[in-house]
Length: 375
Length: 73
Image 1: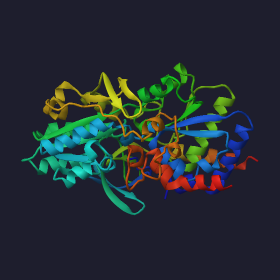
Image 2 (image 1 turned 120 degrees about the vertical axis):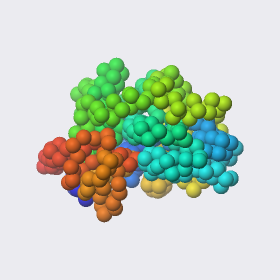
Image 3 (image 1 turned 135 degrees about the vertical axis):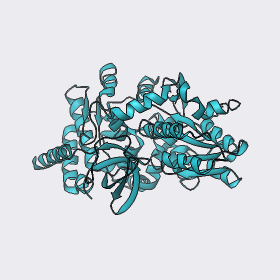
Image 4 (image 1 turned 90 degrees about the vertical axis):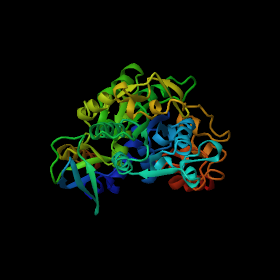
């Protein structure tokens, strides 16, 4: 496949790996965070972690939308579906995330709730048009990548005069989360970030100047293929070794400095920044999430069901998702990883989504642990 | 949620939609967030929407950079 195979060339990967080892030398350790869950998945899936020298450590970041969604927001969606008889439309990744009272959206469906999986936000809009007798709520989650599609369907619903459609908005922003990681008291020390691929196609590379300038941390935006990631890690090492903290873009084939202006304008028209939004692991962060503007209040599920409130719920006591999302722990350091908590029976959200650090390590990395222990 | 593979646009459809090909799998996606997409372009697709068009020249340059690295001892 074009733009895929050539970015997975094993010989070039070996060469990049050798260049990384040379650049890292025998010196002190390097710790880079890949912010995006797609990168976490790719690092494990393509064995990139095994191609890095032991003094280059990748720390998984909070950029998995399903993982950072706190239990209380899923409870909100479940209550809408069970108590208000709405048709609740959700991306597939959210359906199995454990919520309160032993429920998940999928288990709520087993109890009679009308929960439907959609691939695209467009499908939710179509379900509303096809079911005029029912209220349809779209459970909108994700970073700057999924936000423009949500904005687009709100405008579409408005144009079509749909009266039975609303959105439970959980859209979050990348940069406040990066800042939260960097401002965490006693948090994990980092030497730089692999910047997200698809988020950056929308917001562009320019906004990361904040991280480079204010926090003096290098950022290299990378594509999702293994050569992209190896190249980005090499670029980060070179920045650190020459004392630079800049924003560099490895994914120039899809990311421009200014990003997708059309998508940005649409998002600004429909959404505004919330005062604060609660994240799993990071707590309540100011200016980190979006809500619908007052002009679109009729499509805002939180305005349409004012008797419903978000209730903050702590994670399962044994679950280390919070520390893993902050980069403080690795999945294998969680007591229940791979024993009680597995992809078939997830206790925390990081084991549910394929972009979650725990699911990625369980699927592709856990045998490497065993081999290392045995050697 | 990140469908990480670039998709080939094979047909433009009404209402700002397009049919894409992902290694043989065909799907309809919205082009409403991008401008000037033509048949034969590759796009980054996310939850049913094209988010960005791929720049073939930039892709070639990145590949050339990898090849250059490969020549280094």
